[in-house]
Amino acid sequence: MKIIVFTKNDGSTPSFPRRSGLEFRHVQFESVELDDLLLIAEYRVIHFPMSIIIDGKGKVLMKVRGAIPDSYVDNLLESN
Image 1 (spheres, rainbow, N blue to C red):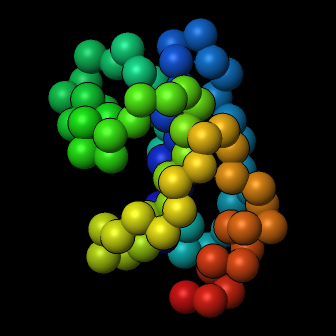
Image 2 (cartoon, rainbow, N blue to C red):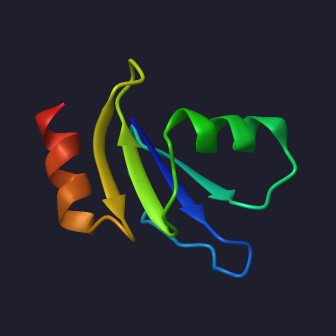
């Protein structure tokens, strides 16, 4: 599972507790890296900050404006 957090450049980098089976990625909107820009386009991110949880197959499980609560992350990890 992967969590991707999208923020503006002036936004602080969010932190998540380390959990096994969970990858965390922070993408800034004004990034010049092609991979970051493709992620913004692929997931149609128009609001910032935004968080997305993706399963191992690339399916979006949850898309939330702002931060995803730790309890949601724990529940999703338990169900998979």
